[in-house]
Image (cartoon, rainbow, N blue to C red):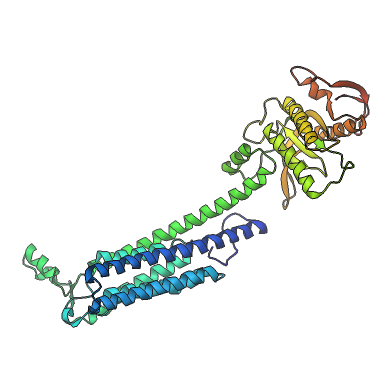
Length: 441
């Protein structure tokens, strides 16, 4: 995608992803244009340094003045290109013109004016490796803006002016001729070398080889640009996936899932521990900043205990321990992890002044995976286990306790009920046909 285009190649993307990708390419192409400008400036600065070395600032040398003026044009052109790249909304199209200026300067350096004293020197001489390398280096600079169109335009322009310069110099050089028929005229190998090395002989095979090399280089750069664009798309999508996953999973699991590149999270049925945490908002003033601090504290403790943030259900936070994520279970003993996390969270909340905090835990079978519609999906855990965990939070508040757990949770603890937990029989819970046993402290 060139800058300014919002279409994203590849799998169908939602509008938000397309906008994010467009912004990413706009940012990268702008940086690429500026990097290409600096690269071309360095090339022409090195050329100017070579002229100084040869001429030793001999201003009376007409060749030095001529070449220095051309390099000055290229450098000035680069500076203008840089300024435009910082201000223009679409800097890539502007680069087309400046690459054309570079091509013109290079051809003027190679095929342009020479003093009369060396007018017999054939400017069309094709065996000029250093000049072709200048062309190739300038062409390589076009890869940085990640624009396949710019590569194609720059490659075509450089090839055209190079071949055009060879032709123009050939027809304007008295006595110039090609190497056609020379091999037949030669009487031996030394004679052939002498004839082909004549200053006014243009070897067409060298011209063809240079053209093929420039075309091949353009093609390779096109492939490189396509690969670079794919990497940018992959990086942006991975960053988006990581940001999405980081809202629910501990960092290590989020990175593992993002690196795997799954198109969706796995759906699985298994036994999990579900924790609901809340605090009493009727005690003291509660503003947005305080709520955010509370959410951050709970999230930190849940992740440290290997749990997953399922969602913010209104005010309470729902966390899950032992839910399959495709990367292995986050916690080998989910019930114990949920109880330990709840106690740690409640103690931390109490220290931070969040009075009236309470939590409820349940253990049982649930289904985990992506839930929602095609347009809006998120990781979730659903089932009666989740509903009963929410009722445990309500039971804790109704009994004036800070933590309530179902009998299924206590039954999964190796050491039984932790100190301070009391067994409460016959607790009526909404959604349950029969009273249940609740452990609370």
